[in-house]
Image 1 (cartoon, rainbow, N blue to C red):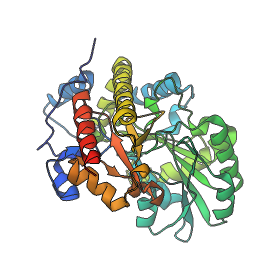
Image 2: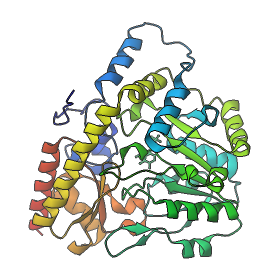
Image 3: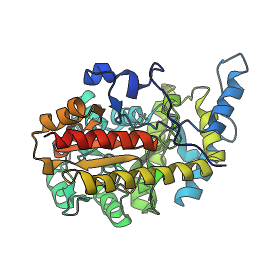
Image 4: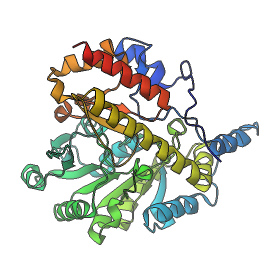
Length: 391
Ligand SMILES: Cc1ncc(COP(=O)(O)O)c(C=O)c1O
């Protein structure tokens, strides 16, 4: 079956954050929204069908997990990432950012610290800060070709005995990096030696592009497995973020007992009625849809890269290795950051993520969500070309 990703769907008035919060966040409710990281493609029909089937039964009372649920999740991970996950390592969590917050509360004492590597997904900073934990920064190194590397020399310098956790974006948001095995192994060795727990946020892991291969952090070595907690979800790939269906994977028994007993005591690992239904439909029936969706996204990314090369050379998109977010290097436009944001919002009428929200390393950058019908991406690029031409 050929799925239709060209279809434009009106999401205004559905409570969609990406659309209905435009007025509040950008001061203009009619911008073209290319910010929040969900897809403007229809959630796959097999997921909708499974949910509808359950909705038709008119009682939505307390619910148990389907017996096969964790086998389905473990099989998906083994088939896609070659990581053999024991079902007892898995538990439900009510969202990945919430998972990060919960892990901080369990493992990081109030006077201890959390390391992040900006530019990176902003809740990695906001969640520890909001919980009163100090954040330690180990910025990524920007290479001449626009790619990023981890800075192990600086990590050794900024890390002290109070650093208890490092939050890793794997694959990386906002630059779409699929971290290589050497980098992950080196990070695992460092963190293991320094008694640091790595939270590996792998929410984008099922969207590697152009033959890139996601490597689960915990799978790279016994030391990585011993010092890490992995979070995953079908939410980004299958466009079901509103259903809230995330999971944690902890292979180390000591870490697992400590984390999962706290979750259980607070009933934070009880799934809602719809989460397992949507996840099982996605993982049991979703492979073909996932492949077609990613091929479409690759086409959108190629379009943006070619367009900028030919018509907006002052903007250099970084080609992501995973997911549907494109990190736009706009530094060659030589605009102060607030004027860059105004160019996109006021002149082009576009709502992208301001690069600076991912850290000061993101100044001069914007993050573009290309998980949308091609016609929307074309319109966005034309508006941007006109706005830049007017400078
Ligand atoms: C790296 C990363 N982690 C977590 C999330 C959000 O996950 P959740 O909605 O499960 O908290 C996002 C959403 O954009 C993300 O990009």
